Amino acid sequence: MIKKLLPCLDGYKKYALLTPLTVMAEVFLEIFIPFLMAKIIDVGVINRDLAYVMKTGALMVLMALFSLLFGALSGKFAAIAGMGFAKGIRKKIFNKIQEFSFTNIDKFSTSSLVTRLTTDVTYTQMAFMLLIRVLVRAPIMLISATIMAFSINSRLAGVFLIAIPLLGIALAVIAATAFPRFRVMMKRYDAMNGIVQENLIAIRSTIILQCR
Image 1 (cartoon, rainbow, N blue to C red):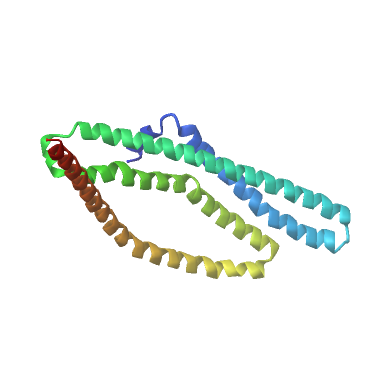
Image 2 (spheres, helix red, strand yellow):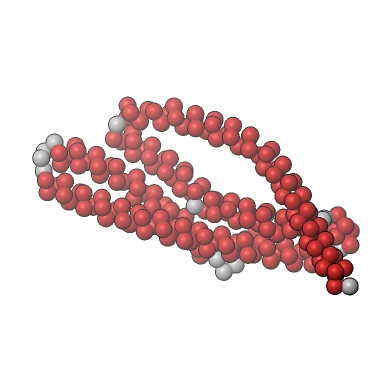
């Protein structure tokens, strides 16, 4: 499957690779900011070292700005890669439809093919963007935040050991509930496209009859 989909990224692979890199940079900067805040309290405030507080605060502001920059870049790169990926998939599907035999033409309705070219490709594009951005960000954020939390305060960080399994169970329940509904929704999309097609054909037929 991956070998079949990779050619769809031709011309956009660099954006697909740059997205995870910028996401990683953004996450590491975001994770390090609370660590610096803890240092300000533990070192600067307790020792009443105003110079240390100012220097560390300026570093935090600088890191926040770079984090914002990397976040914007990751969003831009993900959007470009996603659009290019969707374009490649649509092209492959369209070319495949042109090669259909009469048996395949009778098997697949026009409404179903329209759904494959539009809605399905759009969902695939969104999934790809989530894959290279959110699914890269989430594990790195989880691991980095857990390590940083335990390094700052191991007792309070114990909450992670309870919260993470609970969140995993909740997400599994949501996914198990949503997937069957998603299938029903896709079937309704096919039906809706069929109705729209029938209405358009009826409008064209009505216009032809009126012209006669």
